[in-house]
Amino acid sequence: DGESRDEELFRRCVDQLLWVATPEATCRFLAAEDGAFAEDMAREYSVDLANVFFKHQHHSSLPAFAAPMLDAWSDFDGSGSGVVVMTYSPFSSDAAQVLQEESGWASVTPIVLHELDQERDLRNKVSDFFKTAADGSVLLVQCDPLATSVRRIEHAKFICENVRARHLR
Image (cartoon, rainbow, N blue to C red; front, side, top):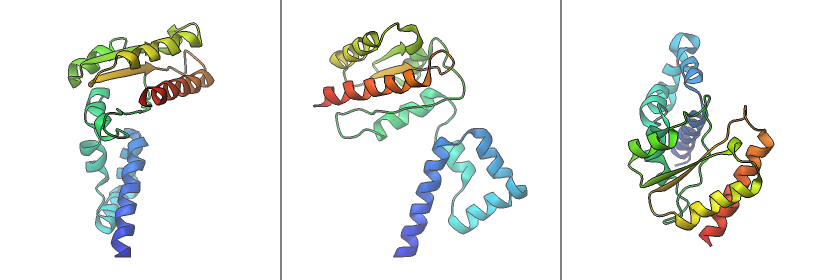
């Protein structure tokens, strides 16, 4: 029926919005109007904001987020996932090692964009990753907007997407 479809669509929209919300923004939602906003969402739309954000979406760390989500977001079997994750704080220098240890993936290959001198260096590293990647391999490209330009970050994303697309052909 149309009403239940609309309610399901609304819940999915809220879910997607919570994926991009910060913990602070979610807490502000929960406290809005002395908690009445969250209560209204739960009563009228069956959406428990706190439960969705803090229990189902795994926002606590990169490994907690990535482990259950990368496979779920795969484009199709055997394709892997092309995911852009934005954080409000930089990764530690051992992020790839921690991600590999806590997720159980076969290998995590780190690339730190601002440490590369030329576009060719990034193309070569990304191409090398896809040439040798096996099931359970993750490419982690760290792009710090304080260390490099947003334009360079966007170009790096473009390079990664193009190399991945060529690899999938």
